[in-house]
Image (cartoon, rainbow, N blue to C red; front, side, top):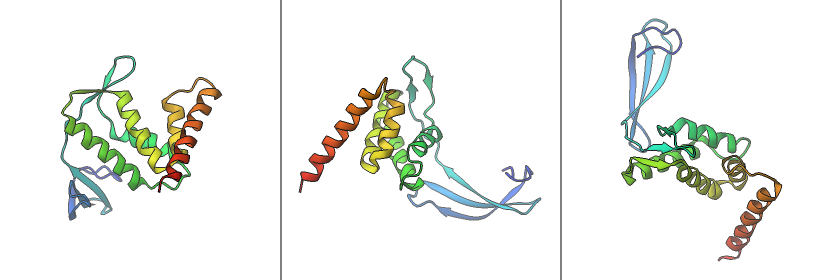
Length: 158
């Protein structure tokens, strides 16, 4: 594996450990040339369905793209990267278990919004405002009113 610091082609594994969930291996590596250390993760390459966009284009499911979108929505909010990664892990697992070859992008977006709503309502509203592309303030206010109504119902429940 190439060193990320000096691009030398030879590194050695210093330590290997099983990941927290048992679905990846964390490896500490050291460059033979510059002797700097870095971490890599090895995981099973899973076949995920293609994502069908609104315009009909098909894209590979991109974990990093989803994490980046969730991080933007959670910026300056008390949501850890571990929580975001857990949501994406669960999404990937459910998509893989579905066995489908293609899924609409809307299903991915709705799943993310559902998860964010239970994690952080501000992050949910941020994500929803971009995902749903509100045309005006009235659509945005309707979404906020819906959230507030659901919150009032949840607070009344014992």
